[in-house]
Image 1 (cartoon, rainbow, N blue to C red):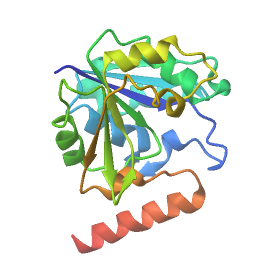
Image 2: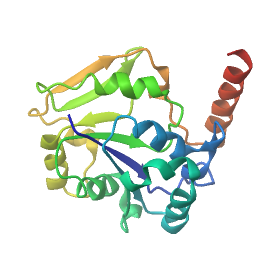
Image 3: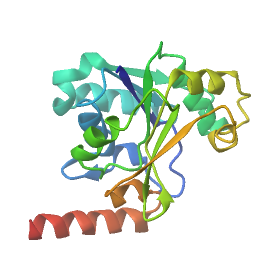
Image 4: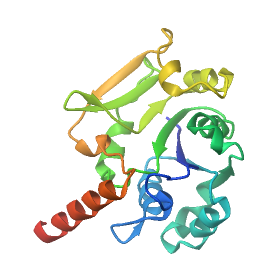
Length: 206
């Protein structure tokens, strides 16, 4: 199974007041944390930028922790990022030829490495869409196949993934997992403070 990582880092981070991509978590940036773990299960890594494209690209290229696999990373600029997340998703998919796509947001750096390893093992040929569930709630990231990728590319840029997911031809598999982190969404300073406090708690107790 060929799995390509697609990480979106294009948004304004308006509610945070600072680019979430470069926020610190566990002694590294959000983007470095995520790419480091995605690298363990993905043959390629596509990063879609928009807002502060040059700053993020520079940060990626100068990050020592990414140097061992930097040749697997492709940074793609979405000049239409202001029109919404779906345009960034479409831009990233254009860079992927075939296989499965691990679609990830940059605002969740806390998922443990084992999550990615366990998640990829859920992929099967009977389904097109794979999504983790914890406590009865659906979370992220998700994995889609090339069938869904083609549907996304055919959609208007004003559409969205939630609307497309209602397509009856998409066969979904929901993985009931033990990772509450799939529900995390670090959008505000309060969210970020909670994340840092949790990280500090883990460091003190384990």
